[in-house]
Length: 73
Image (cartoon, rainbow, N blue to C red; front, side, top):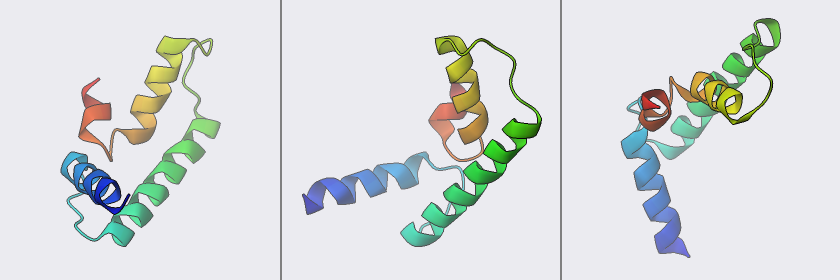
């Protein structure tokens, strides 16, 4: 189990746009950014009817500043 956890953390670091190497700091920064973006969504929602395409736009918006893969889609 430990090997898998270590691998996931390494992969997460590689795909992160934040260039933070400390796992605790990375988690904290991701949580703060995601919370801030979700708060903005409450005030300025993304128009749509909650189908798959709408969900993808919300996901892209929430994680575009954190994850390189989310921003690319």
